[in-house]
Image (cartoon, rainbow, N blue to C red; front, side, top):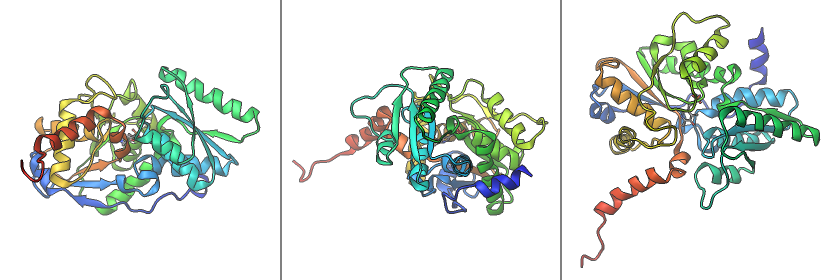
Length: 333
Ligand SMILES: *Cc1c(COP(=O)(O)O)cnc(C)c1O
């Protein structure tokens, strides 16, 4: 019943299916057989530079629009991909967007922030705040907008409500059509909706989530959304790797830099230091300890994040240093 209502309110923000591509050279580089590894290219979703948040926004922004909202309000880190894609979705749907971001404006900010501006979003800087304080700031801003006559709707942190996670329940169905023999889908976990949706469709056994440090208790966060999608308690807890967070969400670790470099040099594919780099580092660790084995079909879900790479000075410096090491002046002196 509720599903029927939701279907009529989903906004069309992308072409589907996204490609599923083989990655034989990456497979070999990380200890799998060449046929084992495929990449689900949700980074190639066309809206706003692409990424997983679009699938969730089809549901959350679609519902907001159907309820008569004209302004979308959401929150995130300064380099939030979700904030950037909410800004793009607002542009596509003809809605105003207000982003409440943690931190303060800084010189030379690039990556997602530059795109937020390009898409015409207004940014409210919330300062150094906790998760709970950021959520409170969003509610304050939304109330202030309403008092001034705007019809505003709040899109949850990362787009990960049960409604938003519906987008990845759907993506799971799309993936099964492309790859019925799938053994394991590996995915980065931030606010949890992406993994939860995949678990809903593929089952807990077939999804391996790599925690990126965005939430305090990923098992609870993902489990709660899985139960919300199913409408009943879950029999199995989500399979999560917690070993790739390192010193924290925005910190670059050596395994992640190695993973980013390996993907770039074997397949010409760009990962980001916060999410997809961690997800591949988690897959590499999983092959190491036998959690993922050669001969099984593994799908790496590429959830996007390229603009975040350009908003991460340390990763950029590391990438550039490879050019510096090999640079030659011409003509040779
Ligand atoms: C947000 C994000 C994720 C994590 O998705 P959640 O649904 O928040 O867990 C993964 N990769 C990228 C690039 C993201 O921006």
